[in-house]
Length: 209
Ligand SMILES: Nc1ncnc2c1ncn2[C@@H]1O[C@H](COP(=O)(O)OP(=O)(O)O)[C@@H](O)[C@H]1O
Ligand SMILES: Nc1ccn([C@@H]2O[C@H](COP(=O)(O)OP(=O)(O)O)[C@@H](O)[C@H]2O)c(=O)n1
Image (cartoon, rainbow, N blue to C red; front, side, top):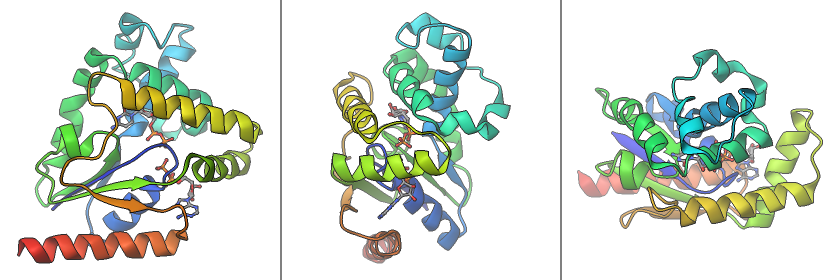
């Protein structure tokens, strides 16, 4: 079974994807980390994430970056959004994600274009959302826990800017697949959001059986 979990920044898609992977014994890929790794590599080279050639020079990034705490920071998130708008960068990362999705037994992937581009054949597609303000509160608290003291206003502005860029890009824009189920987590606790997601998976798989 392939489960695609898409949605904007800090909507809770990673939390839900990890919980579903655990529950169904499936491997999980956070595809945002790939774009973050490219973005962070460009920044560390002193290059420009908005320049497609500079971003392409970073697609063979060092895998050790997955353990680097800066990868989860706000600078890496912004750079990720910038490099991810380049069609050549998306194409360079496509096969790795498709291969992961199509491994025997299935997988859970979260990102922006899993249900639309990476795995349009996924049995279950969730599109997780929450209001920008609530997402900013969650991300702000998360960054503080990680020791990064960026202001709430900056986090909110960043989220709005990333939403706009991710939705407006020509290649694989952020949008729900036609057959995705929407899951608004704005007023759900983490446990309640996971319960809803499990119920949606069960409903989809029961309908398909
Ligand atoms: N339903 C929820 N209620 C409160 N906090 C949440 C909820 N879902 C996720 N979070 C918290 O919000 C932050 C962002 O969640 P995450 O799953 O990483 O989002 P995304 O993968 O969409 O960026 C994390 O600190 C997470 O623990
Ligand atoms: N499948 C994906 C995943 C991420 N991305 C880009 O990578 C950026 C960072 O993604 P992320 O999932 O790590 O970000 P958060 O939602 O965790 O803040 C996003 O803003 C997107 O621009 C993408 O274009 N396609």
